[in-house]
Image (cartoon, rainbow, N blue to C red; front, side, top):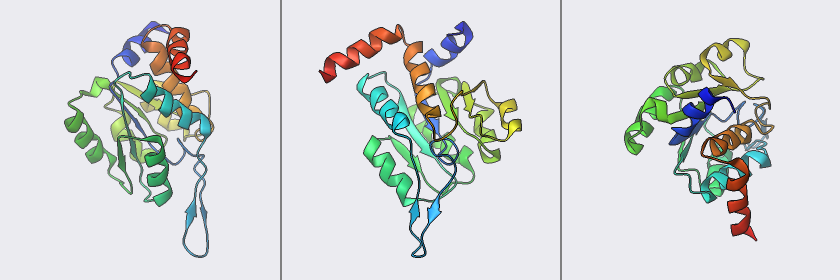
Length: 180
């Protein structure tokens, strides 16, 4: 891992993710009854569980512009610390989270993919976007994942956070010893 990225990532105490286009591929299905379905990637889910089980003292939050019960349910399953559903002005939620956890901008990693994410991308210590985002979003990020949103991009970032805390294999061995 690049030393600059390791230094930035090793300071992270709060990981915030957008949903549509980041934790999903941006698609959703609406039934005639008004129910909404979304597809979340299992790799991302296991990443959040791994982050929690390794006790790296990194809080997690989701901020999404679209109100969705599916998002709330998935966040509960993964024990995400905070969820902001249906928030267009995401910077307000970001400021609340910083205050709640007593973190500075450089201690936050945010993964976003669209114009409403830019105010947060501009402030955080490690700004991430995905390759399926509009191209200009990369102008506001430190890192663009190799994997697309909804296809393991968040897991890629979580693995980088784990690696920034020391030997990656050692961290995984620690987790595996607890799972055996």
